[in-house]
Image (tube, rainbow, N blue to C red):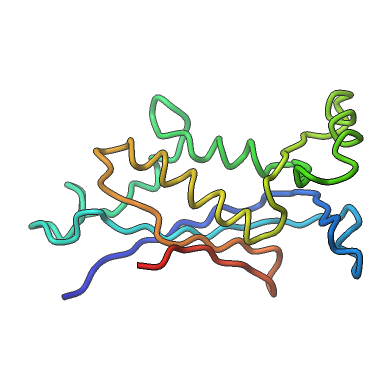
Length: 161
């Protein structure tokens, strides 16, 4: 018995970040990436008469990511977190400096629990699933998120069965 998956790419997110713990490399310096995310979706009801697809025979409505009230607002959330933002880890010793810069309007600061493409992928995974659990009676879910730093480097988050 097969099952369906669908994917959506969210891209063109210009971010600056700093991995302050990477004292062995240039990643401890402020630097930038054009992040891209690939998100995998599956139905929560794969064994029903429609193989988990909705009335339009879709796993997820790609147009449904638009702003509320038309959509679920996930595209706006992605823009808020990753469009021309500065990602800094919450325990960065210069956090106060970056917060001051944000208050002065020099940057749009997003404070992360943990820094890295891995953490960005997990954050998207968790937020999308939280929103989708309240959308369309929780009919679909995210099963995997890949965060690309560039064409050569990416990190994936998924949960084991």
